[in-house]
Image (cartoon, one colour):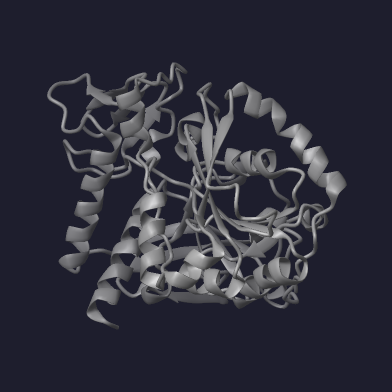
Length: 420
């Protein structure tokens, strides 16, 4: 999928009027067309689902939560709940150049990892006034390494205000089918889902916000690579390691970063020559001697520890040359030129456009970071912003955007633990 892109001077983009959005009930005709269109891919992955605790909660509306593994997630949702009207919460960029169509599908736009008061108002309008269920991916970002991403705390307050049953859709196999690092190349793997009532209205009244957070942490936990190996689920495609360097960006042998390259079924360090093969079961075998890791998640966790060590030593600082795009309305991504992104303990600072552009995003404002791979087939991206505009920064030097997400989460935790 691609989006509309317009080259424009920064001053012109800055002057654009901020769009307003009021939730609109989805159109049955368009929902039906999407339901038909998604059937092909769902047949390809032999999709099936089960239901748990769904008999005694009425016909809706519901507040529906779903874990976020790949773009297939939304297609699964249309399959599961049709013909019931469901309004999905979607990122603002999903509406660019096609806002009218997305309105027909009932999409409610949101700015990832940014305080978004209009989103809450639109969700309440959809459920309480339009009597329509709402679908939200509370992780907001796709999983990088086949495990859950950081969840925002305090969702219980929203659940209690909505006063409708909270439904959970948890998929299995979706990450293996289309992992984000793999350049949108789909694998032929079985995908299933469980649709379960997490909380009925009475349970929401009885539970504290902390108890609700604990349930969500448990329900959203998964480990796709570990389960793949345990279940002996084969991924036989010969491109299964393509793009793997996006998440395994630091070589455990020579400690270099940005030198690993995932091609075919192997991950190779161009600095020291270490080669790892990704097996059909998702594990790693070192071809060039004694391996440091045989698990993607163990390797990824080691990288987290490396970043945490640098932050603790006051040595984390990444200055990255970037191409800058801006989302200021629903019409297009506006490419405004080259600049620089500085990520350090204070947060993210973006400069560019002959010094006309300056934006600082404090580390304490984001519990995680909107980093993405092969974003709309344009490239890897880091995005931050506020209620006025979002800045999409495409590294020019191959900087691993997964590292920026890891660092942002650690910096936020450090600030929270200090009570700042």
